[in-house]
Image (cartoon, rainbow, N blue to C red; front, side):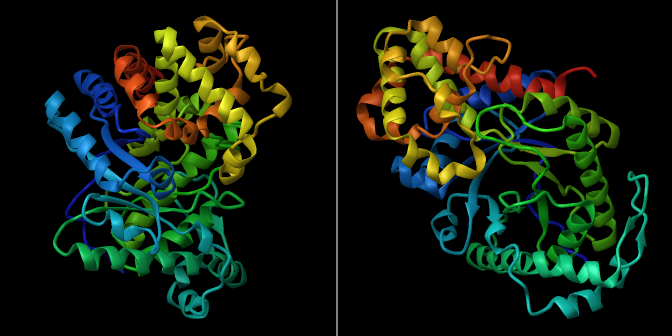
Length: 422
């Protein structure tokens, strides 16, 4: 079916930015403002998952308040959005009034067989045979059995996305919103054929899809660089762009439909691959960088020295003591070698330079510790437990924190993705 164009459209380049404690929206936006001054508009999308709200004790409305305040302060003249991140039917209602971007997460529905597989296959004979896709050298090859098998894995998830989309649309009435569908938190990367079938199924559901987050090959661990075959990632990313362009025409999906890269922060080794593919095709992309800001907040605290450094050290000590509980919810997206974690007593003895060398994401620094960084990435619950003491220190160390937040997003993320010369 042809899907009606969405009344609210996401810009070509967009960056998902998270702000665990609602103090960094302005320095985050400053990074986008620097890109705009260089002639490239990068749309900020503030996101915070239901899990993060529960841990920190915040509400979805607080994200909108912080974003609006930053926009006013910097007189930002471009669009911006607030994302109901990784929602489902159980969690979406509390976001309906304050969000205008909804990341519908249906990864848990993958693998559950739909009763409509047969009718789907019968409705889509174009998916069977040799399928030429512009931008992919060899045609995609399927048969009735393989299409039925893929539909058996993904059709129920697409139907669940449709149910959630219609729930949101019914309750928001005439208030427009942006829809993303997330299928990245699953066991295996989707092939181009699988992505094409997923897009056909989402079109059948009538979803005006603007971004889709598939699972790519390799490891997208929280807060650290990509682990995997970079050349293979580049091929997959380029093939997915080709499939999306094909599906937009074949199924009448929105013209601005684009890929979304989840856990995209700090994946420095693949940014050049993404940039090359975007420049070659003219496509857009949405990259989620949420967790990196929390780590820059810690870095800014430590860089301030004194009590700021002591708070950062205390966060590590408590995270180390509770590492099993902190890591369990994130087991699929972290790889921590415990024997590489320094003892809290050692970290307590570090000066500012030693702490920054271990935590700041600079793989060229021989003292950089990716295991410590991953543990602190999931350790924001410790800071939340400090309550007003932590927030007071964040405010007192605002100068060093904001400098690090802006530099990190602009220099390490926006520049290599959207501005650097090939």
